[in-house]
Image (cartoon, rainbow, N blue to C red; front, top):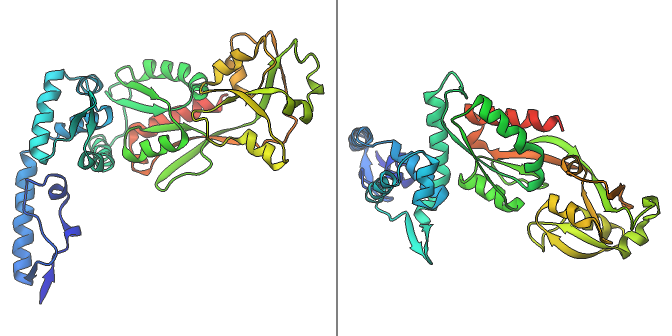
Length: 347
């Protein structure tokens, strides 16, 4: 009886390292005995070739795909730039792909390299879990955690998280980036970041989440312009100029969504990407800022400002940390998530 060898049955090593073994093509048929011979021969070649691979190259590849820059990748994994350049040459030969190509004065990943990133991140996570079955020892670990968040989350979390890292995991590093909601989820799927913090009403497949706290909105205005904030009804709210905090000017937001439900609107005269700067811009102007309440707790000076409840019903929102499911059982990632949750629940 003949057996068809489907390309989906290719061993992982052959998929990822096309030079290392024979490819099994669709449409090739073997008898049962021939199939056993092909399978055993391929398995032997796979194991022999795998034993000759320096798996540290995968760590270098992961850093190169994330940073798209040789020097930054070297800093990320605590290696010299020449060592990373040498590893890149070996990877290009091994994978038969340039991986990084120069366009417009900077390096960009090839389509093949981008296709490797999610699986590579998953494999490295599994290897770390395999080699550290007793769990994560932060005091002895050397690892870089990549987090994405807004300056709102940065203000609430980062000062205290840095203290925890320095006290408990002194050889672990943090890289913080910022992006929109869709960008953060895309980065998680691609393996570019480990964890994202923010408001995510819709979550993509394979994205896990944990609600850190529920937040509501409050209005902030200059005290001299609004001596009696209780007089700020919906009509005055609409007539006043506003500041909007948004990474992208055309993105939807909870405030204007709530206004539209009442067939109301507001005039936004300034759009800024940073929460803390927005609060500073209010003083001495006729502007109103509708902001997440907790950001006021980390402001340096609120003496010239007044706060009041919005004259519209804006639902509370859940502030979450999200990650890709491939990180679920990674002991280091679990340690990080637990610390973030503990620190944020104290807010």
